Amino acid sequence: MWQRFRKWLNIDHIVDLSVDLFLLLIEVVSSPILIVMRLLRWTVGKYILDGLKSKIKKLIYWTMEKHPVLQIWIWTLTICVTACILVLIWIFGQAFGEFVMEEWGQGWGSNL
Image (cartoon, rainbow, N blue to C red; front, side):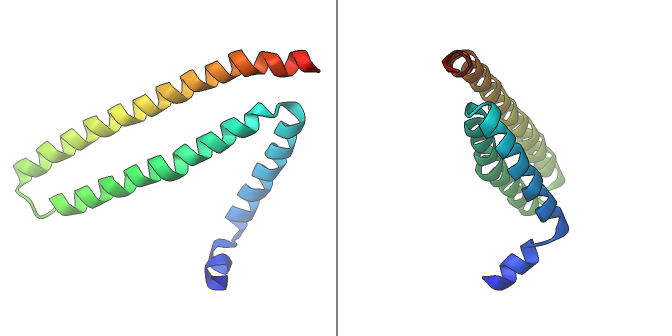
């Protein structure tokens, strides 16, 4: 456990963590709903997109030993499906962000 932490603890992660903490502090002061949005964005990026990337890598390694025509067909299909999934994630993220800012954003400012 300690070795993992020491391996993770490098200047890039420290700077990222510092910037995130600073931004989080500013967001708390300015608008609490942005915290929820940041956590949702992180969750989507961490679990959905990282999982999608790992599945694509496994698929590519699996197809490396297949016939070239099958490889081209699978890779083309994979690119199309991945593009559709990413576009849908982006659309839902934009729609949810607009909904939150429209519905909840006005409520925060009027309460002050």
